[in-house]
Amino acid sequence: MIGNMILPGLILLGIVIFVHELGHFLMAKWRGVRVLKFSLGFGPALFRFTSGETEYRISWIPLGGYVSMAGDSPNEDGSMPEGDDQFLSHSWQGRALIAIAGPLANLITACVIMIVIGLVGVTYPDYPNVLGAVPDTTVAAHAGLRAGDRLTAVAGRPVSSWVAFFVAEKLVPERRPLDVEVTRGVTKFTAHVAAADRRAFLNGLDRPPDPPVIGTVMTGMPAYKAGLKDGDSILAVNGRPVRVWEDLPREISSQTDRPVVMRIQRHGKAFDLTVTPVDPGGVGGSNAGRIGIEARRLGNYVERYPLLQSIQLGFFATIDLVGSVYRGMWLTVTRPLYYREYLGGPMFIAQAASEQARRGLDAYLQFLAMINVAIMAFNLLPIPVLDGGHIALALFQAVRGQSVSYRSYVRFQKVGLVVIGTLFILILANDPLRWLQRQRALDKAPQEGEVAPNPP
Image (cartoon, rainbow, N blue to C red; front, side, top):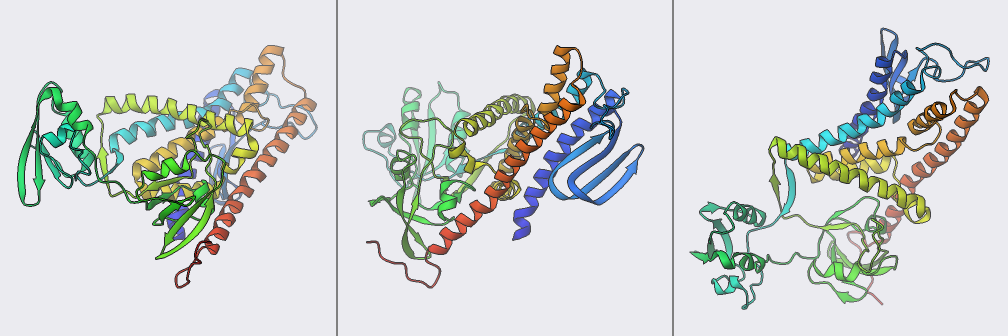
């Protein structure tokens, strides 16, 4: 079980780190800067070998990686390195290219992954091809459809699920009438829908409502920290009964940053817990509250796209992903006390990667693309030690006409170490604190064999 959680995270981090460091490595080689070490991970080497002038290694601590180049730090006597094969004495253009190559490699990788997702297939939640309520005033009712009917074919094409029905419908030109085969018990009949009524007919179709049973609890979100679990049934929110899943948005989304009391049923026992909805996207408004749960998936529908369409969709999806990551970073900077809880380190990534892997290959790949973009965005920050800091120094040299002095460089790096060290402590501390908060919440909930207290 532990391996099922750790392995997807290790694979994901390994890919992200390798791609990033490979970008630096290849650009340094191309620019003629000597590369001394190429390491995945930090600390003592678990495995290593030397080829040419470079030592390649896999190290024990999988929290990142590095490419060590000749002359990437001042000499022991306080002087700056000299020679075109030394990083700090290389031209400012070369240093900027080497620094930006890592983040750029992550961005390109994210785009390739988004294209691959289109080719391997995007998974959508799917449901049985059974009708829910059919109001008497709808075109569907006039066509003879009733609640409980099963839609089994469209224009002669058999369908076996809800999404498959609408995909098959789109294959019929809009100006043509629609023939829908309907099964009611052991009886079959065909509903003929005129082209003029087609849109109204489709708008009148609905599936049975989902029960208020949690299918997924998203790592790090309020529901996770409050102790909600997959399979929990939600009976009420703030004393108001919840009968179907569709009741939840109305009760939760308007309660941003205000605690709500949820009546939960687990293992046949009912108990209360408190969850505080948040606005994770920073969109504001009266219906922005989210707690991080999804309904159970009764099925999946996989849609694959041809290569050219996958390239187009992947390109624009990557742009959206970049915008989403930078919005998240901006919210973290502008509201640090609110959004700092959603910063995650290796434990968070491992949990989230495992969660996405269970959802399907496309979900795991999309998370991999998102982490690549996040690493790109983080490393481009103009903070000393990071790639963005090296780019800033190179641009400063371009404007000033000469490189910074040894003393200024050392001060610049010390500031970076303090900033990055503080940030890493915060991120690494968040992971176990988030996990402990969830464990405390789970311990308070009735366990199997216990009797839950009645609500006051």
